[in-house]
Length: 472
Ligand code: FAD
Ligand code: 2HG
Ligand code: ZN
Image (tube, rainbow, N blue to C red; front, side, top):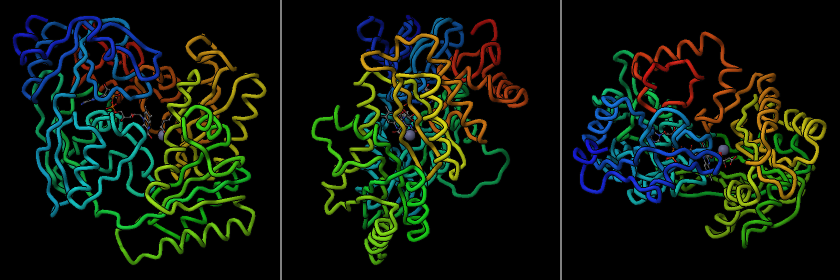
């Protein structure tokens, strides 16, 4: 710690338990282990110096962005001594290129600040998620974050043009380039995207921008069944094509939870389930409103939808989005949940939801389902809430039983057990359960090649014994 304090700017090393506490506890309040200290570098050179010092002292380094991750990847794991390295002091804009449509920012910039920067320049940075005011570019890159507009623009992997990364030995990989095409060997930046800080610390990113959207139509439809939600998605996609930029599913239970927990949040009507649709386009003459209204009229006439509203102003649009985006906060305030982040082939969504409902009724009576998610991506958050008055932190081994049962359902359908949140500490057991020996060996080989002493983010992503050496 003395060496870190000497190498970094004044005030960059936090040691008191009170200063460390927020960096040691995850967003879900399920994981908290002490760090030796919290380091706050102000430059890429500072990050490199801190990593070098920690590597020499055989101390783990836990990179942290906004600490909004949902799998406890950004807080220390139990075991070897670790420091938390927060990127929050590195939030500068390095370049904005409206001809090449790219922006280069440091890792600690929040997603919202990048969206606002792009909008101010008449462009769009499309990644969008409820934690955007806090989540940082480095964390979003490290988790390959998804969110509400993946349907149209892809997840973070599709939005990164270049990266600057501090490697586990303290050297710096200069891959910060805005090129759209570059087939000169392995695409190294992709190694670090979704690697959850195990292979390097992202210090800056060059991101793709898009033409600004000039019109948007946002609608909420009430639907009788999950099957009708899926058919409404298909109808909207067929009519709007690439102008369908958001298609989210909200179960009736999720909507009721928001209405109960979030002041002023009320759905405009009651329904068994809901679909939130957004059509948007940079073209001012695209007949978006007509397309949306036709889809909804046909859905209402054919019984696919029971009721629908179209936002008539930006204020109404934000009210509708809020009903979807407040679900996680409402759930946490209500005692939390055994969270899942599954993907299945889109056609199987109705049957998967029915199977999950039957499973919970049969094996976990009293537990309550909170299902919502990114219908257009086949990605559902199948969150299982403990009985009334019981906190998820208190359910013990049942947590793992529920997770195995839900994830087994997804995997049996050719799905994924973690579509967008990553592995962190909370899905290591699942990774060990579902990945093949070849998958695990490849991942461990990569980790050992880049970080032979397991300095970066120890105790995350890889099952114990994979990629760990005596120091870790
Ligand atoms: P952190 O939580 O700080 O870190 C996440 C991981 O990245 C950790 O493993 C950490 O060690 C690593 N890391 C952080 N910074 C760096 C860096 N600079 N270099 C290398 N590694 C680093 N996720 C989605 O995909 N879609 C959603 O719709 C979505 N909605 C959310 C809504 C809410 C209300 C909340 C609380 C979370 C949501 N998330 C969602 C999850 C979370 O916001 C994302 O995973 C996000 O990418 C995390 O960013 P962060 O800056 O908070 O990262
Ligand atoms: C979302 O889609 C996020 O809102 C969070 O991925 C999911 O809280 C969750 O379970
Ligand atoms: Zn999500």
